[in-house]
Every structure is written in C-alpha cells, then in structure tokens.
Image (cartoon, rainbow, N blue to C red):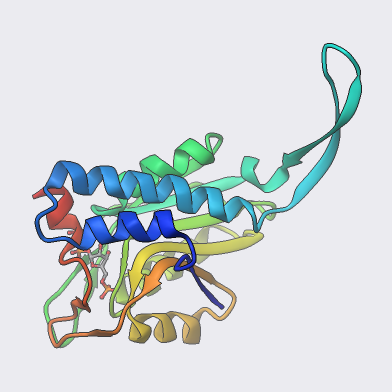
Length: 209
Ligand code: PRP
C-alpha cells in the first residue's frame, strides 16, 4: 500500500515549510535533510527487530537490534534526493548507496533519460530505499525500479518520497505491486506540465538553483 506521514505533526510542519514559496534554498535543503532523518526513523518501525542480551555495568538485561537497519541500500535519484539521502543515512549509517541520474523530458511524453547508473549488488536480506522527493507522473521511478531489478532481488523495496500525485502512485503500483511507497503526503493532482498540485514546485531547482 501507500503509507503517508500525515499523522506526524512534525513531518507536516517541515512539509509546510518546504511548500512555502518564501523558503530559500538553504532552508529548503535543511528541510529535506530533516524529512530524510525523521521519515527514516519512522521506517525503522516497519523493520525486523531481534532481541539480544546486553550487559550493563551492573547486570544482564534484554535489548533489541533493528536487524534490517544493517542491510539497507539507499538509491539516490539525482538531484533532489541528495539532501533526503543525507538525512536517511543518519538513521541507516551502515547503508550502501547507489546513485542514478534521471531527467524528465517535456510534456506530453515525459520521456526519461538515465545517463548515470551506479547501483551496488542487492542481496536477499537487503532493504532497498529509493529516495526521490517528488513522485509526479511516476515515470522516473518506474525507469529507476526497472534498472534496480537487474542488480538482484532484495527483501523489500521501498520508495521514499515527500509528495506524490495519485496518478504516479497508481502507475508505479500497477507495474510494481510489491514495492512499498512511503511519502509525507499524497497531494491532489498533476497539472498539464506534470507538476504536483498544490505541491512545492520543482524540488531540484528549489534546493540547488
Ligand atoms: C523531478 C523529481 C523526480 C521527477 C518526478 O526531477 O525530483 O525525480 O522529477 O517526476 P515524474 O514522477 O513525473 O517522473 P527533475 O527531472 O526535475 O530533476 P532534478 O531533480 O535534477 O531537478
């Protein structure tokens, strides 16, 4: 299914700041880093946990290890996912990182060009987190997911975004029913140029100019 973080007041406050047209690129990047960190933290709640024994300086007691946290692969979709990845890696500090470039052509075809692809081999115990702040038509992620499939079959594939349009989500789900989508919020619709409404504008441009 699709999971949104609308019930998290903090994540919604950061999203509000990102939407604000008066937010400059420094604050915009910081907002994306925050979302990476806190949405990553929320993701750990869906991960496998193992009970362990720990010795305090005084006695033995029970503790936990979030097993999956050690087997994370983050795939960064340039450009806008860079700050999101920076936040995610604070939670998944063991993560291996892949980088792909995908630029979207103009309406009505929105054809995707991928010029740079560097993805580590994927193991059966891996949780792959594909970071891309905006899921508009979904074309970018479909291309990226098709590419990722060539590198192995992980335990879970998660798409982590900030905003998604319903159209993009249905297209991804249709082709990749097993992929889990986590976003801060699902927005209303796409306009004819392929922008999410009400959205936050072009995330890559707002973060990097
Ligand atoms: C944006 C965004 C996504 C893509 C979403 O990237 O960051 O990657 O568009 O659109 P889609 O779902 O319709 O494919 P953009 O092409 O603007 O590149 P940039 O991040 O480098 O600015």
